[in-house]
Amino acid sequence: MSSKRKRSVVKTITWRVLATTDTFVISYWITGHLDWAGLIAGIEVLTKMVLYYAHERAWARITWGKQLIDLPTSPYPYEDWKIKRLRNYLNRQGHRRLASLLE
Image 1 (spheres, rainbow, N blue to C red):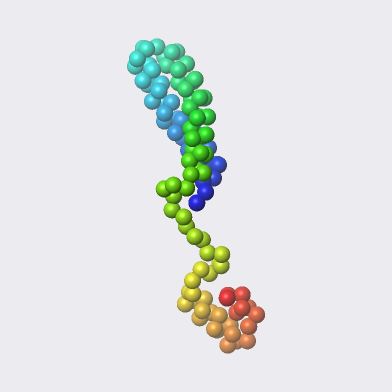
Image 2: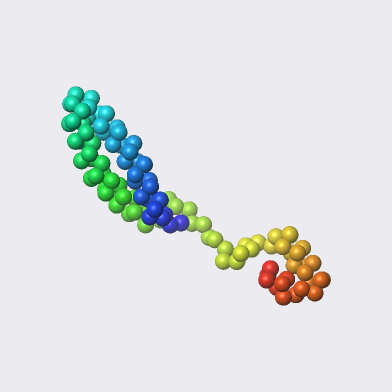
């Protein structure tokens, strides 16, 4: 259910590439100057990256809208017929200790 910090960083960077390209294009379209568009996009990339990361981490702590997945504590969460068959075989062959590992 938790979101890893590394995932948040990668999402932050990929989003910034897309969003900064958009900002650069719009700034150039409005100003008509590449240097102004580059300056605007450069400032925007730094501020928005920090803001997005903080926003992403805050949302990672909010449980609303997430589905809780209850992971089993046992390595075999259900009675699998193959495991049961192997356990019975090991018991018949006299390997009770090995069979007990499958319980």
